[in-house]
Amino acid sequence: MTLWTASEAAEATGGQAMRDWVANGVSIDTRTLQPGDLFVALKAARDGHDFVAQALEKGAGAALVSHIPEDVPEGAPLLVVDDVQAGLEALGQAARARTDARVVGVTGSVGKTSTKEMLATILETQGKTHASVASYNNHWGVPLTLARMPRDKEFAVIEIGMNHPGEIAPLAKQARPHVALVTTVAAVHLEAFASVAGIAHEKAAIFEGLEPGGAAIVNADIEHAEILRQSARDCGAGIVDFGRKASDYRLTDVQQASNAVNAQATVGDQLIRFEINSAGTHFAMNALGALAVCVELGVDLDQAVAGLRAWSPVKGRGVRENLPLSGGGQIELLDDSYNANPTSMEAALDVLAASQGTRRIAFLGDMKELGSQEVAMHAEMANVAAMEKINQVHCIGPLMQALHKALPDDKRGLWFETSAEMAEHLPSLICDGDTVLAKGSLSMALATIVDGLRKMGQGSALDG
Image (cartoon, rainbow, N blue to C red; front, side, top):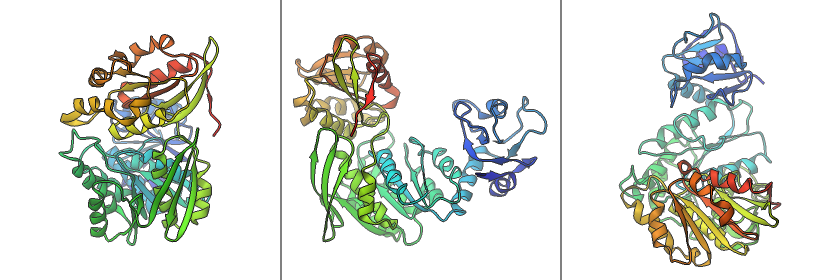
C-alpha cells in the first residue's frame, strides 16, 4: 500500500520533490529500514544526511533532507525541506488530518507503554488499528508514528512522553486525540520539575490536544488527580475517572494468580470481571484505564474485556520466562529491564515477592532523573513492604550503592558499578528454583543481566 506519493509529501511539507516517487513506510534508521521506506534524515547523535546514500542503496523509496548530500547521485528520489524535524512533523499532521480514525493519546509517569499495548491489542479486535512502536513517544517519535499511519485506519493509539516542561502539549496537538488518558503521576523526571505537582500539570497538558467534545480519562487514586480534572475542565473535556476511588470505573478487587491477575470493577451499575495475562497487580489499574478509553472510543465494554485477554507484556516490561540451567533445573526470569523509577520499582518488587520461587533474587540498577533526592529515594527502597519476602538483592550503579548499604545483611548481595561487571558473576549467584527480577533505568543496561541469564540455557516464554 502506498503511504506517501512525492506530490502528497511535497504538499504536506512545503518541500520540493526531486523526481516522482512513492513510499510505503517511513524510517529514521538505516538498520531497520525496509525497501520502499521514506528515509527521514534527522539530526540526533549523528546527522541523518550522512546515511542518505546508504538508505537509498538499501532500497529506500526516497529521503527527506534539508540539503542534498555530496555522496547522493544526481536524480535521486528526494524531498528537500528547510528543516527535517519540521518536515517530519508536517507529514505527521497531514497523516492525522486525512484519516477518520478514532485516536487515543496515552501519557503517564508509569505504565504508558504497557497501557498503549493493551489498547492496541483490544482495538485490533474491533478494527484496523495503528499504534506507536516501542516507546516512540518524544519529539520525533510522535510525528513519526503519525506519519506512518495509513489513511484507512479505524483506531490509532499514540503514546506521548516527556522529560522536561512544555513537551507534552505540542505533541498532543499534533496527535489530536478524541480520548486522552493519564495512567498515573509519580516522582519521575524530578531533575526537571520542582515537584510532583509540576509533573501533574505537565501530564495534564495532554488534554490541550483533545478534539472538541473529547474525553479525559483520569486516575482518581493519585494525589494530584484534581490537577488533572481541572485541566480537563479548562479544555472543555468530558471527565471519566478510574481507580479504587473512582465514581465511573471503580476497581473493587484484584487477585494475583501464579501468572495472571484477576480483577473486578463496577462500571455504573454493572459488575465486570477481567483477566490480565501477566503477574503484577499494578497492571489491573492500567487495564481498567484502557477499558474506559475503549468505551469512550465506542467499543462495547464486554468486547473490550474479551479483547484484553490477548494482551501480554512486551520484552523488558514484565515478561516472565522459564530458563533452563545448563547443570539441570531451571529459574524463572522477570524481565522488567527497560526502565525504572520508584513507583515501577516497588511494583516490580511486589511481583517478585508474590512469586513461588525457592528463592527470590533481584538485580536492581540505578533509577535516573530523580533530582536532588535521588540518593534517599534509592535507599528508601530497602523499606518497601515487598523486601520482607525477597531473599537477596544485587545492586548495580553509583546510586544503587545507597540501597546496597541500607539493606539488612541477610539480603545484601553484590554491588558493581555496571551490569557487565555483575553479569560475570551470574553463575555463582543463581540456583535451581530461583525467581529472578532484573530492573533498572535503560542506561544501566540491565538487559545485559537478562541476556546473561538466558545464555545459561535456552529460554522459552511462559504460557499464560
